Image 1 (cartoon, helix red, strand yellow):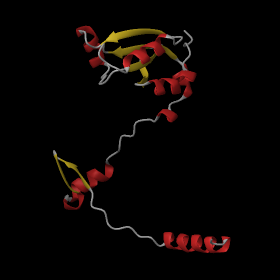
Image 2 (cartoon, helix red, strand yellow; image 1 turned 90 degrees about the horizontal axis):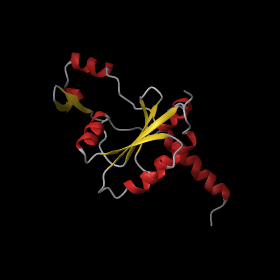
Image 3 (tube, helix red, strand yellow; image 1 turned 180 degrees about the horizontal axis):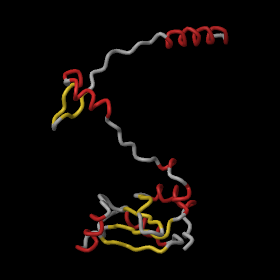
Image 4 (cartoon, one colour; image 1 turned 45 degrees about the vertical axis):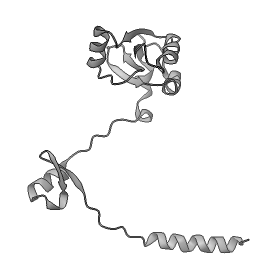
Length: 156
C-alpha cells in the first residue's frame, strides 16, 4: 500500500506535467457559401467574416428568470392518440393549477396549431405568459416535475 507522501508526490508530478501540456493545431471546417471548407483555405475577406460571426447560444433552463416562470398564465398540451408517453403527461397537466387547452395534432386544426408553434414531437406542453407568448416548453414528466414549483397563476 502506498503512503500519503508517495501519493502527494505523484500528484505534484502529475500537476507539473499538466502545466506543460500543449495541444496540437486543430483544423477548423465551417460552412461557406453552401458547402464546408477548411478555414485555412479561406480568403482574407471570408476569414474576417468568420471572425465577426456570433454564435447563437439559446438560454438554458437555469438561466431563465424566475419571474418569467412565475408569470405562467396558461398551457397548451399537444398530443397524439397513438403516443405512448402522452397519457401520463396529460394526467399531470390536468392537475396543474392553470387554465389549459389540449391539442390533438392528428386533427387538421391541431396540426396547424402545432406548426404555428413549431411543435415537432408529442407530448409537448407549451406554457404561455399572460400576453399569450410561449415562455417554456416541456416534453416529459421529469421536465414538468422540475418546472412545477415555479408554475403559479399570473396576476391579471
